[in-house]
Length: 527
Ligand SMILES: Cc1cc2nc3c(=O)[nH]c(=O)nc-3n(C[C@H](O)[C@H](O)[C@H](O)COP(=O)(O)OP(=O)(O)OC[C@H]3O[C@@H](n4cnc5c(N)ncnc54)[C@H](O)[C@@H]3O)c2cc1C
Image (cartoon, rainbow, N blue to C red; front, side, top):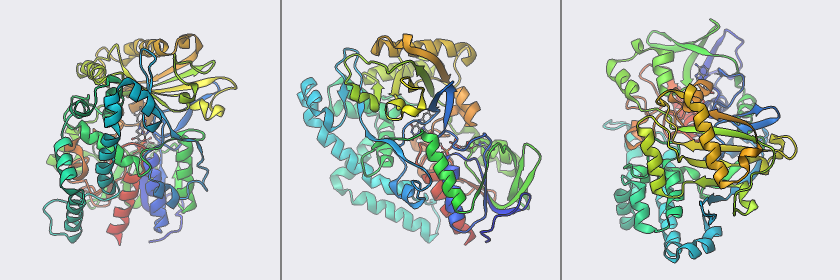
């Protein structure tokens, strides 16, 4: 393989479709392994859903993902992202559960006294609950950075991986192993009801189990999604961080690392088709008509886009196509950006909490009721919110004295009854009303509001369904089954074609592991 950079029109070892954080991570690792690599990104900037952009004159925001907490420190160190410009504006951000009666609850050890005042029972139960989930999550963690094994093969690698998985679970010990088997498929509300009585605490803990998914706290399998998030959050226990300059700065650093390793990154390059010659992926055709040849095509676009849009069903067998068609990928999270004249004042909230994450999910019942509406294509009159004020730690994102509010609002159905053209204004108003009830005076501070519905996320970020994970993160679309059997080891059924985005193992979130794992498989196959 040549590490030289081919000129335009020449043949690359690898073409990476999409310059989101996973595509860039994959490109960086491939280039470091000596491959000539070209990244083709449709947008006029890199980052995909990890991007910073202006949404009102002088106001910038992380336009989709807004918190960094899942990317392993090892990956950041391996790619030397700090040398490529990554700096944190804030780390170890606190989380506070907002309450309608101003009895807000900081989560974690810092909130122990407040929790004890609200419920002595919950204060006593919380540490053991947290420790057990942390133990279980720690056992799951190595799975995230591994290629899922194939089932029923004689390959030593598959057998070794299955054996390793079994041993890891065995090492949990009898009690924790039994507990993992018992609680994994459960709904998170049942688990929380077993341990706690405070609706506020249960709402906040349940929130993380359903954020970015198509579930409510009473959906089976939501303990699994919670454990998965905890596993991805890493050794440090999920220290939430905010890159200086927003999530786009992380993507720029990844692009810098890829370029430094020899990869080329082109923006404004829309891939229209993946070329197939002699039953192998042989390159791509851009919307401009330009053809680019490659030994391997690695797509970070979502699975439906990759297989049905770019490759074409004619290159796949009918069973595989059916699985991709039925892959569940309908987003339920929207994003609200507010340009504010001044810092918001949440009633009864310690201003220091504004640098962290605020949750509005006052009970599991509140969350479930909000989810109920989404099942019928409606948004709830009482949505649940993850609120950040990034300008507290990074004032340069707004004009002097002004602030940005960045809010994930769930549940906002992709296929809203009546459509988003009509629903956008109503939902925006509802969100501002909900926020103003918590932060009196906020409505009067709003200079500009931008709502990104799942439909907008699909359009702006080219993610089918605008889904957080590119494909629902569920037990039946997980690990060896992600996104569907036949491509769970990153290799597509068509030779020379790979997946490296959130749609494959280990899923979405700004983690970089799908990109890293896929690069390892590309290199392994060619070796
Ligand atoms: C509202 C919302 C909030 C979120 N908040 C967080 C958060 O706070 N923290 C967190 O960790 N995660 C968050 N996530 C999840 C996270 O943003 C995504 O899972 C992650 O960014 C996906 O990264 P990716 O590189 O796999 O894919 P993407 O970021 O989707 O990148 C894929 C890239 O491929 C490009 N592309 C697609 N088709 C083509 C084509 N034909 N030609 C060329 N390029 C193409 C796209 O333009 C895009 O740049 C959030 C998601 C949503 C929807």
